[in-house]
Length: 201
Image (tube, rainbow, N blue to C red; front, side, top):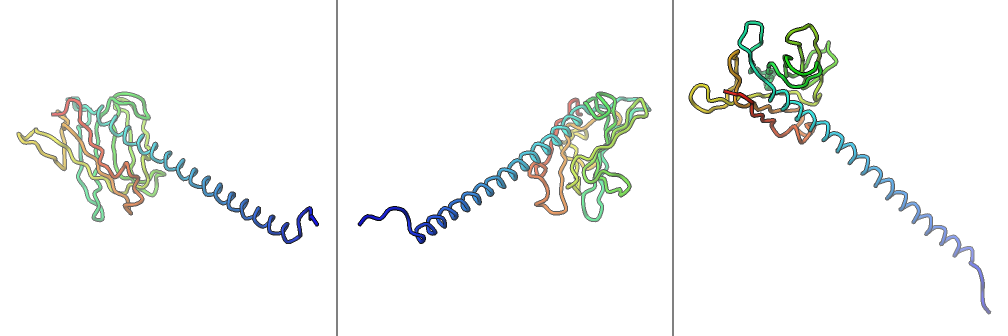
């Protein structure tokens, strides 16, 4: 005698297997969406840091000095705070900044001032011939800035920790960054930013 249809046990087994397959598929899709979101966040963070690096290079490549009393010198201040490099560099640039292009004094430094909204690697801008100013937070994870200048000005090629000249700029500048925990620093910021200075002496 032939039987048609399913028994209750077969139906329960079939529904259980189907439920397990749907659950596994949903879990896989959820994991895939999670990985996709993390990958998208990582790409966005990398693009942001690449923009910061490119902006720093552009500002420094546009550095120049003008020999008059009102113009700021190219200045590198070597400083340490709580055992960490806390250098800053001040220069006049012709590059595009938040205040526009040309004749803007740029100060790169680590902002720790509780009274300002910026934190970490920051830039301050002042018009050379005007009163307009601006401040920009470049990366809040950076807590240490170590800067060196490269020059042959004293007859030998060397990296120098300080620079102050209203007549010349160095041949190159290197910026190194550190975070409070090394794994918090974006991979592109673990590599020093080295800039060949146009017109450097």
